[in-house]
Length: 298
Image (cartoon, rainbow, N blue to C red; front, side, top):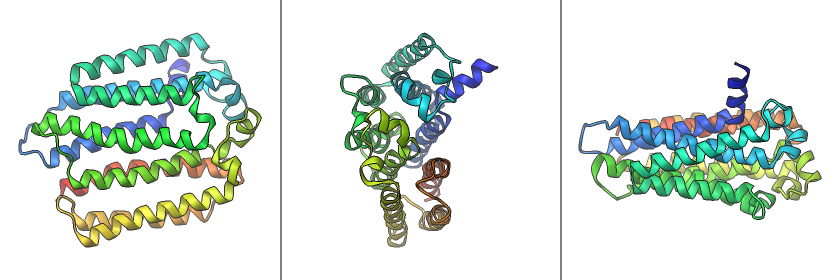
């Protein structure tokens, strides 16, 4: 049981939930426009397992390369706490790497491209000599490229091809991609806000260290406001394939919750901003619930 709990921590549960919901949500959107009632659940399961394995590789590699930093920033993780050895972590990520690629290769070209690009960018993010996470622009680039662009566009193409035989991307997927792009950018900025002590000591040049936590917090909050407002306006405008009522009401509620939660936060307080960072992930989860429902109800 202790090992299982450590493995769950090692896999970073919020990213696992985010990956699961994004895979299922994109499948639902593809199903909503499919002319066939066939579910093809085996293809959904293969995509989910492959993407989750890629997720574990990416977050695991990051922890292996960040052990010394995490002893300061996140001492309760399995590696800095000593529950996992480096060898154990390396075995887990290598198995995850090959499992992700093997299943994706069997499943088809679009899923294989999705997983391959995600693994490549995840490797460049963490592994020397590249270690793009050292620079706030490239760190954010890696996160919003994978979460915002690659997953939404290529994974949708995989499901759309499997369900409909189509290689087209409809307008609703482009709208979702644009929104998640902005949300992923905020996640990339806020991710580093609780970790300033370790980042400063190991010369990781984050946006928080460059501009200060309050300024980054304000920029992120207003970017989220713009993203939510844009979806609400789109709902009033009306887009084929999206239920306007569900889109407007759900995003008005999420926008209000975001502002209510943000007013209680002190960006300079590590515990406070860490809680808000996890709340941003809840907003991420919510998008892959409400947006696909709006598409399915159209």
